[in-house]
Amino acid sequence: MDFQQLIMLIPSMEQVQLYQTSQQLKLQAGQYALVIVRKGHVTVKTDGADAVICSQGYACHPQQSSYSIEVPKTREAEYGIIVYRMIPEDKEWTLAGPLSTFSEVKIHYMLDEMLRITVPDLPAAEEEPDVTLRFRLRLMLERILYIYLYESGMKKEDKSAEQALEDTISYMNEHYMLMLTLPMLAKRAGISEGHFTVLFKKYTGETMTVYMRRLRIEKAKQLFQQTDLTAKEIAQKSGFTDYFYFSRMFKKEVGCSPMAFKKGLAEI
Image 1 (cartoon, rainbow, N blue to C red):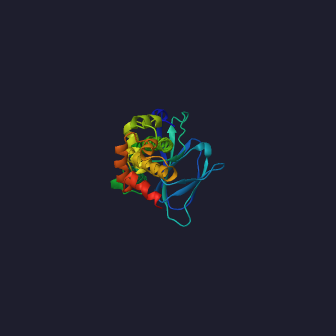
Image 2: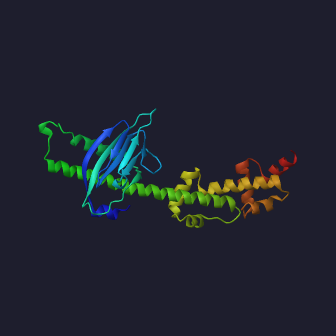
Image 3: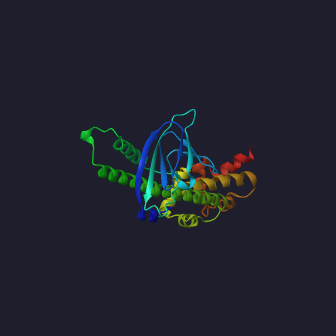
């Protein structure tokens, strides 16, 4: 699904309604639907497919005409269903499945506004011409579709980047003794250096430099415990090219010098 389809189509809303209980949704030919979860979560089921737990949004497609939207028995949930068509109907519209967003407040506001202006018994003084209402509804629906398309794509990219980051951290844990630099690791992950730095801190809680230093010190401690190598040899095997820097960082992390740590192991 991409924006090329949305550019060529005009959404036309047919129905919007709010629910707090489980519902069966049956779409006619040419009908689509958006499930927008306002509170809690629901489970969306279709024939021949795995159930999907939905806490934000779900796009229903007429190719799978029957949907079961289930509210958990022990929890409250509230969700809106927008039924719509795409004009012209002979153009392809493939939006389907779970949707993600960072802008739930915006979407919920537009859903509330849709519900308000489609109430059939508005006082006469508040009524607007039918054409104006339909145009407002179309603009809001188009905006909701845009947000879901754009931000679902952003979340998929972040998920892909996080997987690449996980692979890179595994690489660091296996190759800590090598000269590892930010440009090299970011390139390996296929992420810009700035984005890599932000994701690394978000994922590990530390900067790459601090994480690498802690990792190497832990490996050095293991070498002290498992071998009879000298402190300088262990420094090199742990990825430290400068012994004095190694000694200073070791004391900072462990609380004693490498030699004192080694001596303490011999006394155990």
